[in-house]
Length: 557
Image (cartoon, rainbow, N blue to C red):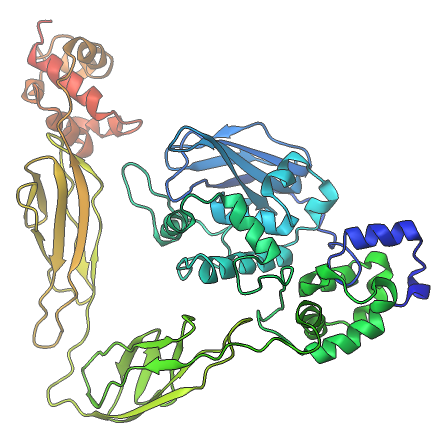
């Protein structure tokens, strides 16, 4: 940097060094407030956070706490606030210990609060997520732009994959704004929620804050001992070019090195925000230049030699149309290998699935581009012949089998729903007949336990058999005996208008058929028998239904 142009006093220079985002500066400014009205989302750790307390602190204003529902969902009116905001959920974990997680709110709409979003906030702050909330700095909060959030999200994902070995393939690009379903006592969460479960397992007894510190310092990752080295590609760039550029543009003010500039984003942010008078470098320092500077400051002018890696790509041999082989390729580094076809008219590749399109010669490639520790592997090529099928190629089909929720003995069961893309009839069967049985689409409960139902379709002369789908769910024991006195109060408040004050007298409408059989009441509501469907909202618990059934067994109470 040219000190005469920046005209920094000693005090300003110290401040610039302390808040440097790269070669002499801090973060960039964020957008002003917006006209947002409502923020909704889900708080979860793999299991939905039920009964948690969600609060927002914003650039201007804050909210009173709201309580999360049993599925972790919440909704907050932000019409009187100026965004952005930092969100916090306070809750008790499984050991009844107080915990908290954080997230960012840059616009109205969906906002998730999870361990992953907490890691993103911590990375944005170069510290702890809790400090962003507890020591709110409005100007710093405004600097957390969408681009910075995206960059921090990428760093967190890289750490989860490379250091904790979490499968991040099911994580969306936007971990904060993408809607998802968390696991509750009555349902299993979706794939996004499954990543949170995996993270919990991989963390083990370690604290989330320890992982967040590793991301910031680079400890435990491929960038260890390089003060959070980061480039736009995740790979080392041209250290020699970085040395020349740093010497010409930055060393006059910052000397031989500036640790914070090992992160390319901090350099770009400092230039864009004209921190310490660095704005004049906007025509010189672009993303590639910032990558080169980061590499030089992290590794010196002579980059550290990268570890060699090799690829093992299992040979398939010749194939015949109609086959559906799975490809297998691994790298000695453990990094994911990319598979591709150079002959798409004959064969195509999706992840590890090979699709044979026509007879001919199929050529596949296996590549691994490396990272900050491993050099790119030598490409492996595999070529084989695809012969024409001797029999017609059957059309593929898949089964969609809607998973039933948990069931309770003595209660009505839902009709099972399973369809195939071919339109052929799907056959349902129970593999746990001691717990449950299936007849057509009718599910019958035999005993408490885990019920597993399979859905199969064998195909026909033109359609191949579908892969069997399977769903498992818990069957809870029957409810405790109903309390007739409690049921009497419920009956008189809900049913006496149609069925009479005393059941079985006057307008009975067969109401006594429900004596000690709560499923009769449940079915009547579900199927709108006698116009009883309106009782589905707000609905009644299994225990309430059992209480009314008990009263109907003793109407003279």
